[in-house]
Each structure stands twice: as structure tokens, then as C-alpha cells.
Image 1 (cartoon, rainbow, N blue to C red):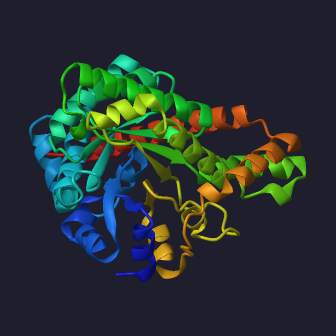
Image 2 (image 1 turned 180 degrees about the horizontal axis):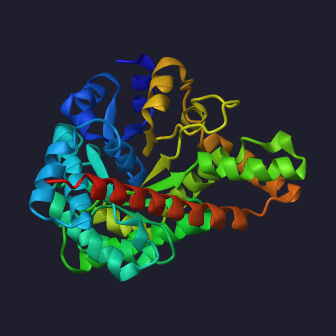
Length: 363
């Protein structure tokens, strides 16, 4: 095992892999990453599945059987993705048991075409929860305005949720409010709150990508590469505020567990930046860092894990955001653009996945 990864885990950061494929599962690679690189969870998204299906022959037998049965393409995609998620959940079940259900989690996203439709998102969440049928599953629901009531409803029904596509501090606070409301509703129904878990996926590198473009146009290159980390640090400050609230204390006393902040989009997009930037600068207890394998390997090799790099830097983060505003960066517009682009990208990947499955549904 990597000494650096051990140190990162020891700082209270759960290391999750931002990738899944049947090839990775059937070769035992995921088990190897659990043993050797401290991986304790897996996330997926439509882009990851589209990529997995485009490579190799791992899905051919199932595609053939689905075609023989005359299954339509939408149900075929659900069957294929649920198969991989169920398998990964079984591989990670020992981690889930050993951590009392905190880690060992695998995430499956609702159809991103439903991101702006609350009722359909809830219906899809219910269907996927039933289909995978594993206690260590997370259903991923996007943090759109329409996604917020879906998050509350899913949690109220005992469905564990990974809230995805969070970019703004205001929306993150709304996500935490939706989470608390879901737990309160679950408690009112008499559900066991200790069995309902959630993480909130706060995106990092995409914030830098968008703001860096604007800084170049504004002639302020000296501020580049700072927004993503500052934004995430302030998200953790917001998380701490909620953890100190009376509302949360009442739920915790009833057995509820925190909705951990999850640092997503941690692969560096700008090659001029350190390839472990979004690991080194976001070390703080009670968080998850979900990494593409390239970032995981870089972290294991040369990340600089030197204690808490979030809480001592709140003032610096506020100063960074103030400097960006003064430079002319419109934060509200940035996060709106990023949310819209995120939904569009996942929808495009989903359509690519549907097209790929459709072409390969051959008896």
C-alpha cells in the first residue's frame, strides 16, 4: 500500500474511484485497488458507462441475451448498468460491513434527461433502488432546482442518495436543507435513520476551468487556479455550520449520519497545475475524494498530504472569492453555466450510451 494513501485515509478522507467497467470487475482490478490503494467506494456517471461500453467485449454476452429477449434499449441500459453496480457493490460489501455502512458504497445515476423533472426523478430512483437491491447503493440525483424535492422524497423513503452536480455555495446549502428535510420525513415515518446515508458531490476542477477562461479575457491570469479550491473550502465551512445546528443535532441523536461532502471532478484539467492539486488542498476529516484512476495513481506516488488544508484557510478562501468578484467574475453566472453544461454533458453521454446499446442489441 502507498504510504501517502495511508496518510490521506488517516486524515479522514475516504478514497473513492471515479470509474467502473465490467472489465475492471471481471479482471479483479477493483478488488486490487481496494487492497493496494485504499479505495473504499466507487462512483459512476453516464460518461463512464458510455466509455466502458465502447471498449472490449465484456458486455457482448449480456447484450446478446437482451436482444434475444427483445428488451427495448432503455431497459437494456438499466439492466447493463445495474449489473455492473450490483457486482461492484458485492465486491465492496466487506468494506461496507467493516465501516458500519459509512463506506463501501457504489453510486448509480438516474437518467440525466430527467434532471429537470422532480416526479420522474423520484420514480426512477425508486426503480433503480429496487433493481440493484444492495444496501451499499447510492442513487445519484442532480442538484438542480427540480432535483431538490426529489432528494428529499427519496431520502424520506429510505433511499440513500449521492447528490451530484453541485457547483454553488447557495445550492449546496439548499441541498443540505433538502437532506435534512428528507431525514425528518423518514423519522416521522418511523424509519431507521442509521440505514439512510448520503453524500453531497461538490465539483471542483470544472469551476477552475470556467473561471480561468474568464480571467484570461479579463486580463487577470494571476488569479487562475484558485477558485475551485476556495469554493470547496467554503462549502466545507457551510457543512460545519449545518453540523453545529440544532436541527442536525436532533437528527443525530435519533441515529442519523452526516451527509459527507464529496470532492468530485478532482482530475486536473489544466496541465500547468499539479496533478494532485485537488487532493493536496482539500484534506479535511469526514470527506470523500472521488478520483479518476490517473489522479489516484498520482496521489499514491507524490501527493503532499500534510494535515488539514481546509479549515485553516477559510479567510484566504473568502479573500480569493472577493478578489475574483472585484476582477469582474460573475460567480452566479459561472455556476449557472456549469450546472447547465453538466446536465447537458451527462445527457449527451446518456444518448451516446443508448445509441451504443441500440447498435449492439443483436441476437
